[in-house]
Image (cartoon, rainbow, N blue to C red; front, side, top):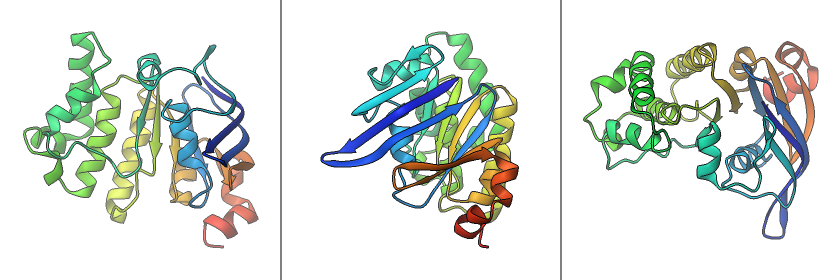
Length: 234
């Protein structure tokens, strides 16, 4: 479904990605692990069209998307949930969700997606007239994911969805991601909670300073001594 070939991305004169290769098959949850500054968020931002590569290609199916604008990429079926939630704090929950659907022209699809999202996140339906900025951190994360789903994506890019959340909320968010995947949405997940991510994902990639240094199925990564030492606490 998604294939990255020899991807190089720079911030000014500093190269952040040094020719990475990555692929995501339809129906999978794939996770990218790595320390801060490894290039995980840069990878997602480049897939989304918010950053442009200096070299290399990104294919969504058979369409080369690395030169497309971000809104064109969303229309193809790729939506990103950014790190730090980034909800529109002065708009209501419902208005945030409406903005998520701005590329979807079919009203029936929008209505169907909204009903599905409220079944996933009943708390959001309860608070749909509430300003997003007054929600708790966990509720804002729910809203950020829900807003991404309103774009009716084929693949959802999630950047650190558990960041700053209490352990009980982390468990809930990961259970919801699994449910989203089981409904037919492919997921590419960037996450520092390596253990939770690998238990959820089918496969994983490990990034270090702009390079992918390891790629394997989740079971093997969970038992890999180097991964255990670096990301799983021994």
